[in-house]
Length: 420
Image 1 (cartoon, rainbow, N blue to C red):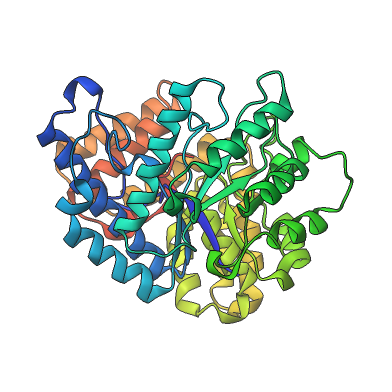
Image 2: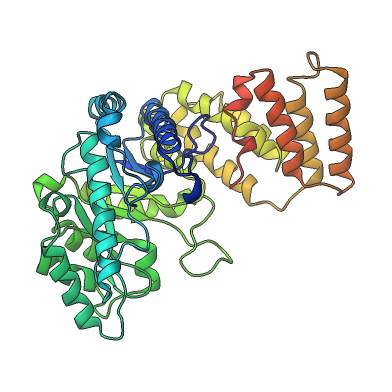
């Protein structure tokens, strides 16, 4: 079972995807952005390999205007060397990648122009995965679409338009239940009509349960049976509701206790789990390490400590010191306690004094090498923050620029600077 995350690798330098507005989308600009985004993808793949993450969803925005008439580039040929390099890393590591066309890719729309654009978008996603040289177990996930006042007719349109898709698109396409229109029961029915495999989404299922009151495990089992050998292991999407957020809003982080309970119920099914959560790769590593606590090397947990320490300190000195103690005991016993403390600290209310303490610890990396004006600038921002005149993010931004200037890699890899 692989556990992965979607699109953004938080806290990993040089991995942001770039874009541009239509009026600036000339050939040179599109070529440059494509090149930079592929380089960013390669860095994400390297990061995933380094952190034993073998499931990853690639952003649909990686090729600017990828399915739009504005982009007439043959980007899959122009960047063949980059694609080949990424391909070898994916295949050698055993990573499984996917893509998820957005909410406007709707093949059951009654409007022909919407369907035509949606088909172009699916072809673009298929072309990107084909350029990576990955087989049909590397998927594209699609929602069924709208109801348009007649659910039966909407389902018929989906089936008809699905059948017209290029074969290469159909071999990659999987369909997913959503939180409003199509329950897991609906999607399993559509799977029987099309042959498309089904991705089960637990949070969508909680919000939009079917009339058939099977257990979650039973629905996951049924969905997994729609996957053929050539499709690879079945996949599910796992997320948790954001406390106080609108229904369907993803939590900031995965609560590890609830995840482990869910994991134990499906462990024997051998299903891949895509985590959908705001802190992305942070939760993916947390879930992977907790599930495989017996296999986590001491150095890996120490690396996590280095990343988390100032984030935790900015919320709770007590949790910081307790986490530090865990670095001295057996890894298997430490992993669950480590992430429990990290979660506890992140759930605490904002503490201005704790934030000041963490900022001063981070400033310690620069105090003996900075200029006089930099020191004055930091002390001024710290005072402004303590007086309530500026947000903590402004103080962190100043420290981040210092970390970049003095190339303090320890800080550049820290979760302290991440804004979720």
